[in-house]
Image 1 (cartoon, rainbow, N blue to C red):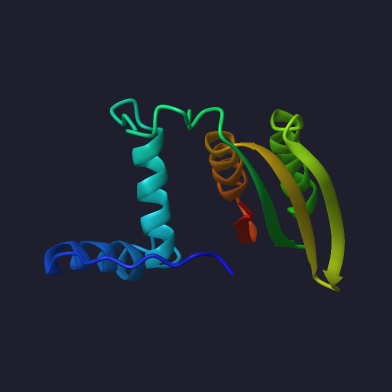
Image 2 (image 1 turned 30 degrees about the horizontal axis):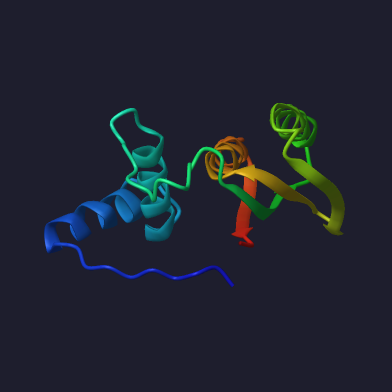
Length: 142
Protein backbone atom coordinates (compact mmCIF):
# COMPACT_ATOMS: atom_id res chain seq x y z
CA UNK A 1 0.00 0.00 0.00
CA UNK A 2 1.28 3.47 -0.87
CA UNK A 3 2.10 5.85 1.97
CA UNK A 4 -0.63 8.32 2.85
CA UNK A 5 0.10 11.95 3.64
CA UNK A 6 -2.44 14.32 5.12
CA UNK A 7 -2.28 18.09 5.38
CA UNK A 8 -4.50 21.10 5.93
CA UNK A 9 -5.55 23.58 3.26
CA UNK A 10 -7.67 26.70 3.31
CA UNK A 11 -11.38 26.53 2.46
CA UNK A 12 -10.80 28.67 -0.64
CA UNK A 13 -8.09 26.32 -1.97
CA UNK A 14 -10.35 23.35 -1.23
CA UNK A 15 -13.12 24.95 -3.32
CA UNK A 16 -10.71 25.55 -6.21
CA UNK A 17 -9.57 21.90 -6.15
CA UNK A 18 -13.13 20.62 -5.90
CA UNK A 19 -14.12 22.85 -8.82
CA UNK A 20 -11.33 21.46 -10.99
CA UNK A 21 -12.24 17.88 -10.09
CA UNK A 22 -16.03 17.95 -9.97
CA UNK A 23 -17.15 20.77 -12.24
CA UNK A 24 -14.43 21.08 -14.87
CA UNK A 25 -13.51 17.36 -14.79
CA UNK A 26 -9.87 18.40 -15.21
CA UNK A 27 -8.71 15.62 -12.85
CA UNK A 28 -10.13 12.21 -11.91
CA UNK A 29 -10.08 13.00 -8.19
CA UNK A 30 -8.47 15.27 -5.59
CA UNK A 31 -5.49 12.93 -5.12
CA UNK A 32 -4.73 13.06 -8.84
CA UNK A 33 -4.78 16.87 -8.68
CA UNK A 34 -2.39 16.97 -5.71
CA UNK A 35 0.03 14.49 -7.34
CA UNK A 36 -0.03 16.49 -10.60
CA UNK A 37 0.55 19.78 -8.76
CA UNK A 38 3.45 18.34 -6.75
CA UNK A 39 4.98 16.79 -9.85
CA UNK A 40 4.72 20.08 -11.71
CA UNK A 41 6.32 21.90 -8.80
CA UNK A 42 9.15 19.38 -8.41
CA UNK A 43 9.86 19.45 -12.15
CA UNK A 44 9.83 23.25 -12.39
CA UNK A 45 13.01 25.27 -12.86
CA UNK A 46 12.19 27.33 -9.77
CA UNK A 47 12.34 24.34 -7.45
CA UNK A 48 15.51 23.95 -5.48
CA UNK A 49 15.29 20.94 -3.21
CA UNK A 50 17.24 21.32 -0.01
CA UNK A 51 18.49 17.84 0.72
CA UNK A 52 21.22 16.40 2.87
CA UNK A 53 24.55 17.15 1.17
CA UNK A 54 25.26 13.44 0.85
CA UNK A 55 22.13 12.78 -1.21
CA UNK A 56 21.71 13.98 -4.78
CA UNK A 57 18.04 13.55 -5.71
CA UNK A 58 19.00 13.14 -9.37
CA UNK A 59 21.21 10.18 -8.51
CA UNK A 60 19.00 8.64 -5.80
CA UNK A 61 17.87 5.31 -7.25
CA UNK A 62 14.44 3.92 -6.55
CA UNK A 63 12.72 0.66 -7.35
CA UNK A 64 9.15 1.06 -8.48
CA UNK A 65 6.30 -0.85 -10.04
CA UNK A 66 3.81 0.53 -12.52
CA UNK A 67 0.53 -1.05 -13.59
CA UNK A 68 -1.77 0.36 -16.24
CA UNK A 69 -4.79 -0.89 -18.12
CA UNK A 70 -6.71 0.03 -21.22
CA UNK A 71 -9.71 -1.31 -23.09
CA UNK A 72 -9.41 -3.47 -26.16
CA UNK A 73 -11.00 -2.01 -29.25
CA UNK A 74 -10.53 0.36 -32.14
CA UNK A 75 -7.87 2.47 -30.34
CA UNK A 76 -5.92 -0.53 -29.08
CA UNK A 77 -3.10 -0.30 -31.65
CA UNK A 78 -2.58 3.46 -31.10
CA UNK A 79 -2.53 3.02 -27.34
CA UNK A 80 -0.03 0.17 -27.59
CA UNK A 81 2.15 2.20 -29.97
CA UNK A 82 2.15 5.13 -27.49
CA UNK A 83 2.97 2.80 -24.58
CA UNK A 84 5.84 1.19 -26.48
CA UNK A 85 7.20 4.60 -27.51
CA UNK A 86 7.23 5.67 -23.86
CA UNK A 87 8.81 2.36 -22.89
CA UNK A 88 11.55 2.91 -25.47
CA UNK A 89 12.44 6.30 -23.98
CA UNK A 90 12.89 4.70 -20.55
CA UNK A 91 14.21 1.26 -21.55
CA UNK A 92 17.43 1.67 -19.53
CA UNK A 93 15.40 1.86 -16.33
CA UNK A 94 12.80 -0.84 -17.08
CA UNK A 95 13.93 -4.15 -15.62
CA UNK A 96 10.83 -6.15 -16.55
CA UNK A 97 7.68 -5.76 -18.58
CA UNK A 98 4.56 -7.90 -18.71
CA UNK A 99 1.37 -7.59 -20.74
CA UNK A 100 -1.75 -9.56 -19.85
CA UNK A 101 -5.25 -9.80 -21.25
CA UNK A 102 -6.61 -9.77 -17.70
CA UNK A 103 -10.27 -9.65 -18.65
CA UNK A 104 -11.86 -10.19 -22.06
CA UNK A 105 -12.16 -6.46 -22.80
CA UNK A 106 -9.00 -5.05 -21.20
CA UNK A 107 -5.22 -5.26 -21.36
CA UNK A 108 -3.04 -4.85 -18.26
CA UNK A 109 0.60 -3.81 -18.56
CA UNK A 110 3.07 -3.94 -15.67
CA UNK A 111 6.62 -2.65 -15.34
CA UNK A 112 9.42 -2.91 -12.82
CA UNK A 113 11.46 0.27 -12.86
CA UNK A 114 14.87 1.09 -11.37
CA UNK A 115 16.15 4.63 -11.83
CA UNK A 116 16.16 8.14 -10.43
CA UNK A 117 13.06 9.46 -8.74
CA UNK A 118 12.80 12.17 -11.41
CA UNK A 119 13.03 9.64 -14.26
CA UNK A 120 10.38 7.52 -12.56
CA UNK A 121 8.14 10.58 -12.35
CA UNK A 122 8.70 11.34 -16.06
CA UNK A 123 7.84 7.73 -16.93
CA UNK A 124 4.63 7.90 -14.90
CA UNK A 125 3.65 11.27 -16.40
CA UNK A 126 4.25 10.07 -19.95
CA UNK A 127 2.20 6.92 -19.43
CA UNK A 128 -0.54 8.93 -17.71
CA UNK A 129 -0.72 11.33 -20.66
CA UNK A 130 -1.56 8.54 -23.13
CA UNK A 131 -5.13 8.98 -24.26
CA UNK A 132 -7.48 6.11 -23.32
CA UNK A 133 -5.29 4.58 -20.61
CA UNK A 134 -8.04 3.71 -18.14
CA UNK A 135 -6.07 3.09 -14.95
CA UNK A 136 -2.51 3.84 -13.88
CA UNK A 137 -1.08 2.94 -10.49
CA UNK A 138 2.46 2.90 -9.18
CA UNK A 139 4.37 1.90 -6.06
CA UNK A 140 7.81 3.06 -4.96
CA UNK A 141 9.36 0.12 -3.12
CA UNK A 142 12.16 1.88 -1.25
